[in-house]
Structure formats: structure tokens, C-alpha cells
Length: 253
Image (cartoon, rainbow, N blue to C red):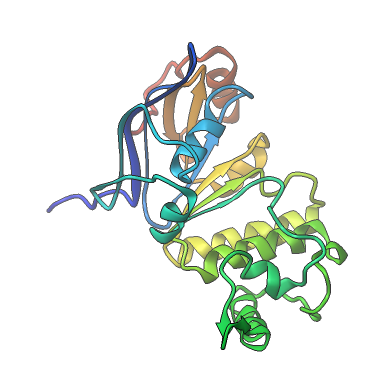
């Protein structure tokens, strides 16, 4: 029986800025409904990789494929049209706008040449309800909401626009335990819907709670990948710090 193609994968992609090799021959793959923890120190290449996947950068070499077909992610809008949504650490929310305006930011619904605010609010309520996110007043500017609620608004925006691949950069940074649990529950819900998630985080406890696999990067290269069920946090730390593989056989493609 033929193996299902990954939801998205990179094959040997490289990127240089001047004489600096930000990525060198990087290959990663993500399956539908999988959470892949992307780990490494600052400067390891994680940010460059996610910007490549989100269409902000284009590779100097290598391929990006979705469902086995090569794609050219020439811009963030191209990536979004293919179902790739990115939630950066700063969330890219407009603090002075309300919830619906943020969910439809840059992709507003129009009726007769004017903003269709009623429909945007109705659709926002639908996606929030679907994800079991309780925000009683959608008319409030988002600066009124907590960090966890703001993270849920950003995730709802991605899901409304039919994200197949979700890239999450430090989704629980600066959140308290209760809000972290809320975001983690939302991530588990998205997995059940078949959304593939790249999870970038420095919190190994969060990664091991959520991720099915981890991929460790160092100096613009992949050190290795492993199932979280088959590797310890200490072994992952050794991969991050020393760039060394575990002494036992745990690696995956």
C-alpha cells in the first residue's frame, strides 16, 4: 500500500544572507493531524525556516511540497491561499480593533462596497463557538482581552480561513497555567480536525505535552528528528546544545 504523502515538507532547502548560511540542506515533513515541535537555540534557523514556509522568504535551493506536489510560496498571500497560516509570537493583532475586525484583518467582507460588519461578527462567533472559545463581547477592542484569549483570537482567524498547516511561534509564552491549558486544549482540538501544526517553543515541557515528534536544528541544519514518545527531554537538550544525536536509535525521517 502506498504511503500517504506528507501534508507539507521541505527537501534540501537552503537560504543565505550575504555570506551567512541561515539554512543548509534542511528537510522536514509534517503529516495531517501531527504536531511537530521545532526546537533549537536562537540562530539555529527556526525563524528562517518558518518564514520560508509562510512565504516571507524564498529558498535559494531545494523544494517545498504539499501533498507530494511542489509549490512555490512566493508571498505570504500565496501561502495563505494554499492553507498555510502563521501565528507569530506578537500575534499581529490590531489592539484598537474589535474581535471580528481582527479575525478578518486584511480579508474583510464587503457588501455594496462597505464593510459587512454584521456578517463578520456572525462568522467570528461561529468559529469561536466551534473552537469552544468563550468571548462574551466581540465588540471590545482586543487590548481588553488576556494573553490566552488573544492567542485564541489569532488561532480562530487562521482556522476560519481554512488553515491546513498552522505555524505557531511560542504560543504559550507569557501565559499563566490556566491560559496555557486553554491554548493547549485548542491545539489538541485542531489535531483532531487534521490540521498539521509546527510548534516553535523553548518550553520543553509544553513541547513534550503537545508534540508527536520533535525536530532539532542547530547552525542552520537539522540535527535530527524523533518521536516524543521515544526520546527524553535530556536527550533533546543534548541535541539542542551539542548538536549530537542520542546514543540509541530513536530517530525518524
